[in-house]
Length: 130
Picture: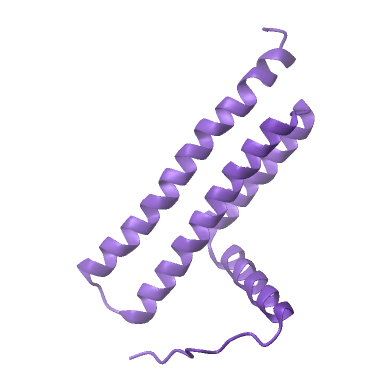
């Protein structure tokens, strides 16, 4: 059985932010998919700058990016928690991890659709097709 420090609260608001940033940092350092999503986000922002997106398109783009990154962070937390609870193969643990991964897949699929909606018209305009 794994012992977890329960009830330990941050004494200062700055500690809460520090711990949150540490968690994000660890996810980026340890999770290949998180790095993949970050690269996709950076490329999307660069494309948005090149295409001079309007405020509405920027808003949709950042919501999509945030959706995927949050889903990936939650998935990573769930995978780590399941790993703490059971160190051996379990069909139930696999199901939990698969469902969490499915959430990331849905978020990423929605982000791709939103990306098409955000970028299609500006790309067509840049190409002189509209």
